[in-house]
Amino acid sequence: MLLAVGLGPVSVSPATTINVIFSQFPILQNLVSGNYTQLDYNIVWGLRLPRVLLGFIVGASLAVCGVAMQALVRNKLADPFVLGVSSGASASATFFMVTGTFAFLGTYALSFNAFLGAAASIILVYWLSRVKGRINIPTLLLSGVAIAMILDAVTKTIALSAPNALAVHNLDFWMTGSLAGAKWGYLTMPLVVMLLCLFYLTIHYRTLNLLLLGDNTAGTLGVTVGRTQKMLVLISSLLAGVTIAVSGSIGFVGLMIPHISRMLVGSDHKKVLPLCVLLGGFLVVWTDVAARLIIAPEELPVGILTAIIGGPCFIALLKSKAGKAI
Image (cartoon, rainbow, N blue to C red; front, side, top):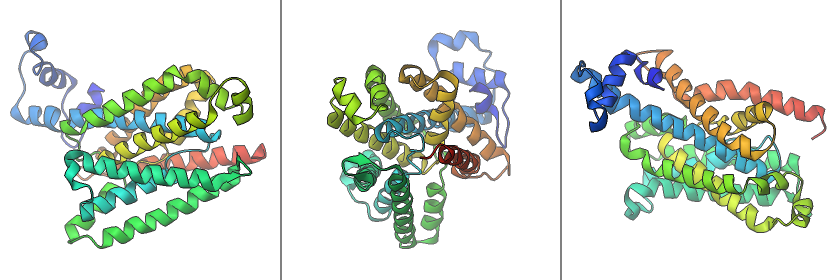
């Protein structure tokens, strides 16, 4: 993490990075030399550290969101990006950015709008995919793709109505996913939401394990299936909505990380959830480092790089599932 803070168009050594960070905490100030410039301070404390921390929270949240959605629909292909949840959050958030809906909520307005869009899209996809009371996997995937395409078109239409070219540029950059606007003030809500959702899922890890056996089996083993599914919809919407509000649409993290975690530790959610937090966080942090180094001093939206990495992974996973007759 310290190395990630120091890397960028203007590099800062790990020793200087530690000096700047430690100097901000009275209990640690005696351990540092204070040998850094104002530029080092601005880069580390003002720009990079909040960006790295936000990247870790975003990656962890998207990975946990993927776990929740895959338990909800009992399929490893579920992901906020694939099933249109990210598109719903983006459309609603974009609508707010242009029109100012729910502006009376202040700093929480964007997150609230994104949450509403995410909740609406996940409920719609879930409803469309149910055939005779059961989730039909091909219908689920096709519904997700269709809803995502429709909502992406809605988002672009809203963006075209932005009042000026700068607003359109900012919306385009935000919609492709970026951590460039990270600030200390953006960390609190995503962190609180992630911790609360992770806490709920962790204490109910046995319920998540049983849901993978099917609704009827889980019900006979004592799981209140309907209530649990509603909680998973709420958790997925909260994680996707709040995350997208601060970072834009960063795809495929929720698909790749749970799958990799299960390959490493098996399908027990007690082990999968904490590993997803670590892997998801580090994936987004280091993808963001690559995004600001590849064409430095300019930078790529991090969502483009995750799509380049995640697209082939999704195709490989889809081919694997096809071989086993989805």
